[in-house]
Length: 223
Ligand SMILES: [Fe+2]
Image 1 (cartoon, helix red, strand yellow):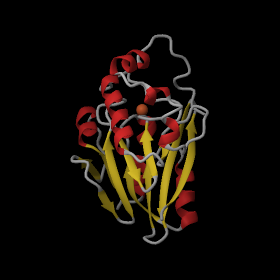
Image 2 (cartoon, helix red, strand yellow):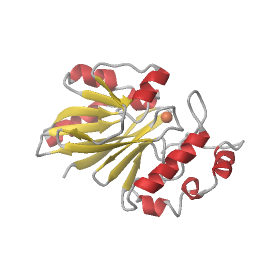
Image 3 (tube, rainbow, N blue to C red):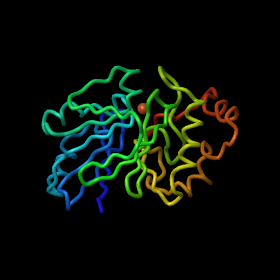
């Protein structure tokens, strides 16, 4: 069983959560959305005596990808995964980039990864289901969901994506987003279904109105 380490990385004013899975049997590691703090990532790899083999990107916003080039340069065998839709829409490029097209399971060395296409926050956002963890990027937070402003964002697609997660992800799965706004991460989807308003709204039109309402404050008050 892979072990999960979550790093809180920051460069003012950004605060991100970078998740790493390490597998002692295969001696490999996987990282989701590497950003800001290379030393912390290197410390985890050294502590577990594993090699970084895979980078999974939920989307292409800078605060989720800004260590990709450095990591690929340092670990030349690393493969970098992102959806084809995200690559095409935003023109993301890096070495060793692998496009996810059909969303069938990926059997990577030491890790079984189920990518789930969840557009809305960006044109081609992806969540990654691995073991009992869902790495949800800026699609689903403990406290809400990602904003739907900017190029490629779409609140109607966000609603559909959250419905997809509700339909397909087991209730006991822990939710590990790319940011937190005060509450702990790792809560089960089942618990968020009765606490997270964005998961509770059943009408797409109500959801879109609520997500896009004027005067929202604290959208980037990540802790
Ligand atoms: Fe984002």
